[in-house]
Image (cartoon, rainbow, N blue to C red; front, side, top):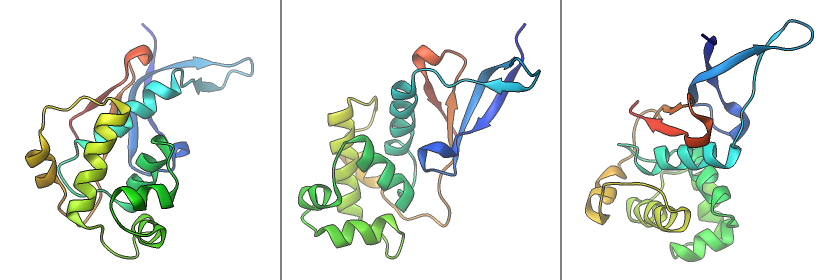
Length: 152
């Protein structure tokens, strides 16, 4: 049976993403290494975990979602009727994100990235409450062809 590992995936710009169940192999020098196949699928699972999180998005999570959507700060600002400077302040966590804007961003991400959710607009809106600390995003990496977010 292959050895598995929990990996903290900071390369995505977030400090709170853990991938469980990644296979560990030895390279030519005998060092233990892991590989991350299907990065697009992994990022989709992270985005899904963010939009379904039970508390408000952090600035880094907003930046991750915006990047996954392929939007500039100005484009994201236009979506939520704010200027690009507001988006930048939210991403840098200089001021709290407005709940209605966050709900709209979550719904837009669900639609554009075709993310799974069981929640409707009212439930998504209720998730947009600032939290003292960010959520952990735990991703099941046992099947890299089908990454899945886990309950934190």
